[in-house]
Length: 490
Image 1: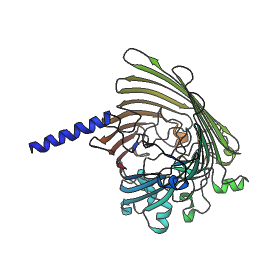
Image 2: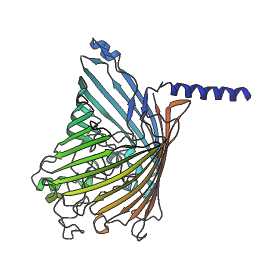
Image 3: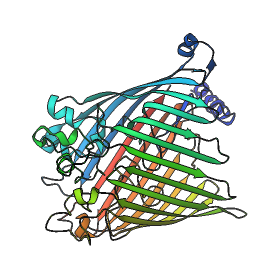
Image 4: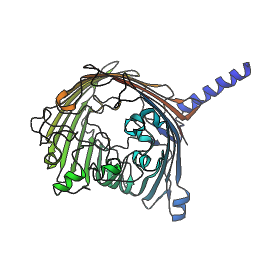
């Protein structure tokens, strides 16, 4: 027993030394779900070497969910679900600047449908571990998809990518926090050729959400055949505008498969100031712009980083079709409190103050969506992210003010958390009950991410969230959302 303890201590010291020496694993996973590849891509001179000297990145994972309400009824049922999944991403070596990427993903969910009377829509957090559309048609809880299939050309510090790919900008995210990432079909340009500037342009034609096997329109809720559950085959993201539907777009003579154009820029040319600009456009329907400033003030033992963000949404025809509400009901006789129920012109202002002291970061943030229309960003990019977004809560309905206090410990950019990454926050949402059909609420959140010190390729995550609705508990049930995830990267 004594020798075994000595061996264990030796392994721990060796692994700590390796980590300190920057010998990172083949790939690492950041807390936001982004993968970091630590293997350098080879540059070759023949097509044979291009294929043979590529890299394969594997991932095994499990994600488990327990969602519980403080009272249950026909619309609120507790659920317990688990899932197992795997992915294999193959990246070729670079030949004359060209390379290819192919990513295959799979997920198998486990749950008892009898727990919620076979009403699959009541399964909340775990819904992205399988396809609801496939399940109601075949009973299968498994999904398989090519999440990446693209060709890339690199010149200097600029990448041109065509095909199915991960597109991470302010408005579009891979958001790989369940089992399969959110991916897009289209063309992107990413560049760091300008000094202290990162630029990205994307022209996207299709999307494959996390719980789909097939791609679909980017900006259309498919109500073409409700009896066949068509709404689960199109953009059924929980942030999708339900009024921008197949039937309404057709009736208005608008395209049901409009592209999404995104421009993203980050600049650090001015000392201590980071400037972020982003914009999207869905032609003939809707567009939005975002501007953000973050300034760093250095003191002896800590840093202060004040930040502001402004978003403006422009209605280019979508408001008359779907209305001002994400629920798609503001164009009806009851305007649900919207001053102009047929307009999607909207604005948001946000501010935050962050303090960094040693391994700690404390942030107080505020967001205010003005009393106009709801913000529409259904591509897993969240307008309140980094300010008042917490545990899947959408707080960008019109006339909503939110306040969040957050504490983070042991953050790092390498994606390997030998010291556990800890995050805790309290979010207060002051909602407009007439619009959102919600009461004011408080969201309590705690999360931990840690890599196993003796085997940093393994990472576990625990996330706990409790949303307490302050108003009439009989109208809206408070709930507990718990998640446990393990990843093995190889």
